[in-house]
Image (cartoon, rainbow, N blue to C red):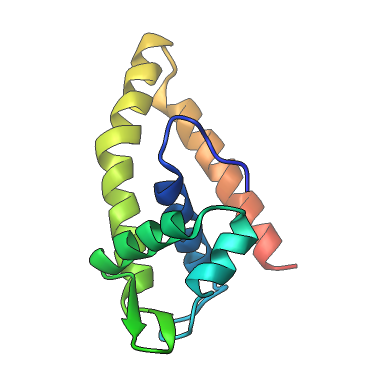
Length: 127
């Protein structure tokens, strides 16, 4: 994994595991890779992985079973989606709207692009 310099590695690792949960790689109550295994996979220090897992555990996305490892919490998928929606609404959307105004892009143009992307996704799902 290539890490960005402007964000702590453990947060990027936590985001990656969340992406994997959303993609269906790990289902509710399914075991995720162990700390050492994930460290080797991503080529990071074990302490960094522990920090990422602790963060996810605090957020209720994963939980540990003594001697068995970490597992995806039953509500993990919904928690991740809600957190990301909130982040989008509070950080991405205001900047996006500001750019629309500054660049004089009418909302109808955004709507067309959204509709085209949605139609493209629907076609991909039907294949």
